[in-house]
Image (cartoon, rainbow, N blue to C red; front, side, top):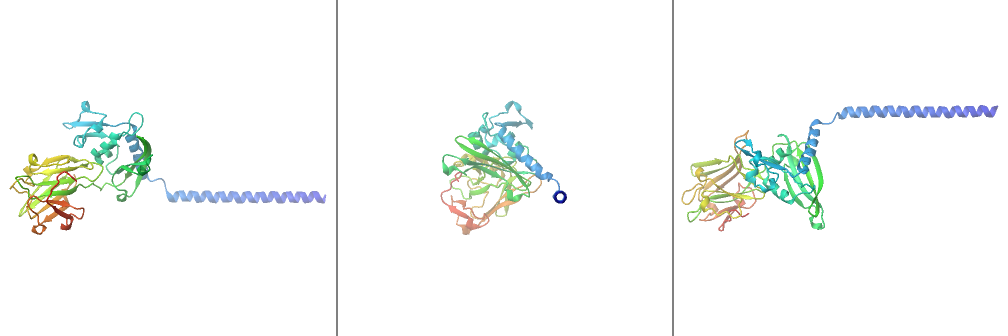
Length: 356
């Protein structure tokens, strides 16, 4: 009888221990649940603006890689569907800027098309953004990078990269996919930012103020970026003595990696590899022969830019005087420094218009 009582007592002690353990465990779960609930309340719901960026990045990449894309030109302010084409890569920058564009990059087999990648240099960043459906308050950075190749030196090679730097944004979202490009694998990455203050700058690389033999004055611009740059709103002004003349461009585009020449007389202009030669003789900014637009040995040249909401602001300003030693037929060549400083310009007796 005593042994049975002891067994009952031991069983009761075991049950009590189990109950106490379960009670403590349930209490722990209740505390943990409360903590997680409080944490969720403190963190709050997902940020709607970040969700929109995520969706924009994913949908934008999908639009670029669903098919080969299309181009629809404008005619008299309307979409000219009769002349629309899926072969948008065959059009130059001057044509593409005058229409609606979705620069799709793949063929019917799902592989990236080399010609379409090359043709991205004829597309402005704004065109790409509109084509993939971005809103006006967002910005884009797009890149294509080699991630696998039999040639080890090609790995991490950047095939294309341009757009708004992420450093200008508060928030950003990224979407990427891997594709075959000939015998390599490449990663396409779309980054969407909540910044709208960035614009790409053309570079003023060379100009001539003292032409000889009746030749024209000229200015050379270069686009160092991968995307094309819309020149609408850009302008040039020259000060020669007490006179200042200026021109504001209402159209025009400079393809990525290309240079263009503005001249006082196109028929006599050497152009090298320039993608265009633009006659602005009627504006008085540039002259020909003895008709000066730019001052021979003293003057000021400004490059400006304006958008729909602002008046022109000065991007570059160059002021030269007799101390520069500019001789007849000499050009003034930018060496990469601050354009406002004389030390950033070299005098060349062998001008190279159109050759960077």
